[in-house]
Every structure is written in structure tokens, then in C-alpha cells.
Image 1 (cartoon, helix red, strand yellow):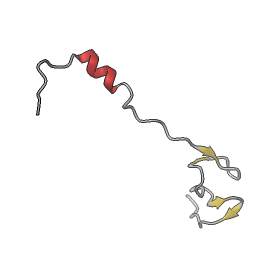
Image 2 (cartoon, rainbow, N blue to C red):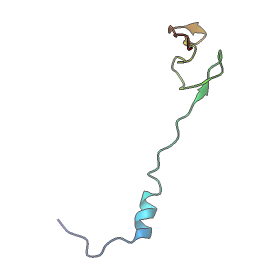
Image 3 (cartoon, one colour):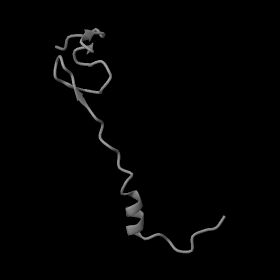
Length: 61
């Protein structure tokens, strides 16, 4: 295997890594309780999905 003759500069390394950042997750608003939730999933706050209650949610004290 060939080996590099010279080291890569810090600028070149930083340019390559410029696109490696994680993208933020896209959150949607729950239509019933208006909390932020992941799209296409039941709301963890109120337990509804597509207008129906699908999860039993314990009351918080």
C-alpha cells in the first residue's frame, strides 16, 4: 500500500470535515396537545396518533 509523503494541512483536514456535522432532527407539532414530537409517531405526551388515542399515558405529578 502506498503511504503519503507529506502530512495533510490543518486547513485541508478542516475542509474535509466541514460536512461531517450531525443534522438536527425534524420535529412536528402534535395536533392535539401542540407539543413537539417526531413525525409519523405517536405523541409521547398525550398518546394520540392520527386523531386516535393509541398509548396510555401516565399522569405526571
